[in-house]
Length: 113
Image 1 (tube, one colour):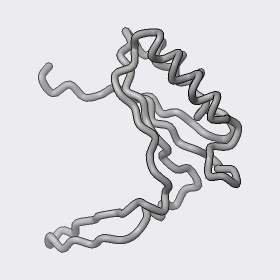
Image 2 (tube, one colour):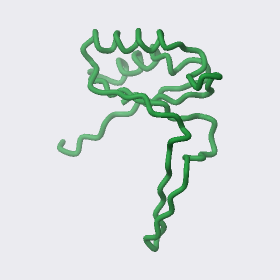
Image 3 (cartoon, one colour):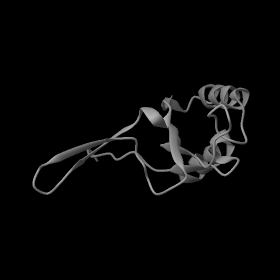
């Protein structure tokens, strides 16, 4: 899974350093390579809600993630590739890795193995 974190956003709310066209080209290349499993862009951060459950079971719900970080999870791709090196190559090609952003590469857990 490629977790796309925007380091900064522009005035239109998009990831700094990449355009809509960059994303469209990356989408096409992932699909053309036959490795695309799923992926989504997440809605604006102001639509987020955070839920926490205390040890006593009390639930707290607050608007937004309000994390102590400037990075924001903007979306993800699930790709099917043979190994970590190939996943890292695709992560480096992702527009979200530009302009202060980052792409975290993590395997999807296989609990049936």
